[in-house]
Length: 465
Image 1: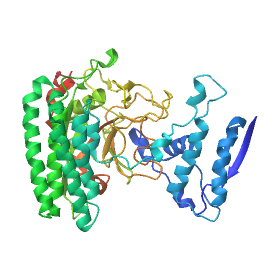
Image 2 (image 1 turned 90 degrees about the horizontal axis):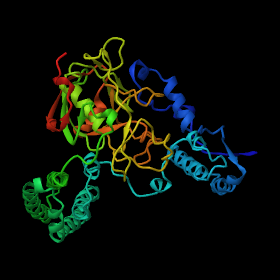
Image 3 (image 1 turned 180 degrees about the vertical axis):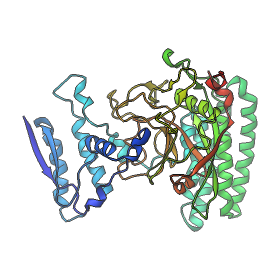
Image 4 (image 1 turned 120 degrees about the horizontal axis):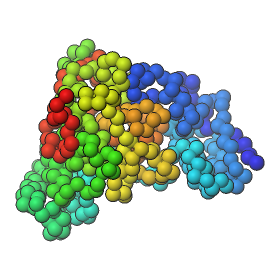
């Protein structure tokens, strides 16, 4: 028998606040809203208005957990809740509920429940949103010494948000901590370099050491404007050192996907877009880093299409403030037609779970029951790049890609309900802010691989026909 408990979730929202961003799907359906709206409503979204209540059906054994949550709301009866507070509060309550063992011990008992973020994620510190930092932490390495250099250099970004002398004092502490970590851990960093890349890695460490001294001088001179460019340069050295720690591709792709185009490592592309009807921006080049370590099939498929010039001349097909999307070719097909088979080439859903050695294929993390798992490539950064697919078919991605723009109240970084459902395979690392200026009809003049093409194996673009 179930008990129904009602409580006010929020008290100051109007109906217009309930308009939801649409989930990226393939083909012309990305222009329609009914299907994706139903996905949000069915899987996650609480109905929060001043006139409505959230009804939670609970098993008797679970009522106690929600009882304390309800008390909190009754104590706050005069308070107006924002959408963000409402969403997080609902997620916290639901997380407590679905975290309880079900009376039904069958595997399907959990499959019907939405995938909610780990509660510790919701109440922890600020998530990593910088694309460069996300890519550094996504590398398949385990070297604490280099991470201890990396972290204080990244913290400079937060320090610079503090105005005046206090901000520069904080930067100075960051630089001193990074320098100290480099000196103390240099031998451990060198020992972690791949043998074939050791000379290059040592050279980078020497440049990093000199750059630290230069940054220290910049801070002492109180030259605030010069801090961020030097920080970016030093973090580039750090990232390159970390890549020199990867000796070879760290795992085997499943046999059924082994003959597909695979990116066994990283590559970078420049996407040049011609912008229409914008007097302030005629064209822009977006630099995108593709991560084949964590998504070899997905990234390999994209690089192969880039080499075929598949996207050259294609328009931006969706730009709604939530995502920018393209990749739907002209004609009835919703993906790339492989000329060798005359059929649409599709790829499996590919998700790398943090802490695992290889991606999972063909299933969402929700379907696998991995409700608290974090993805190695999360939807944290503005300009996160992922594959669009049919909503109800995991392995239907082909050529349509999207970039996430808006951090919605219901898709916060590090607790994003897109994570584990869509395959992320890269981040825009330069000019990402200009993605928000793109409109439907803007033209992708070209996408070119500028580095890492040697990491592409099984390239189909080289096959005649």
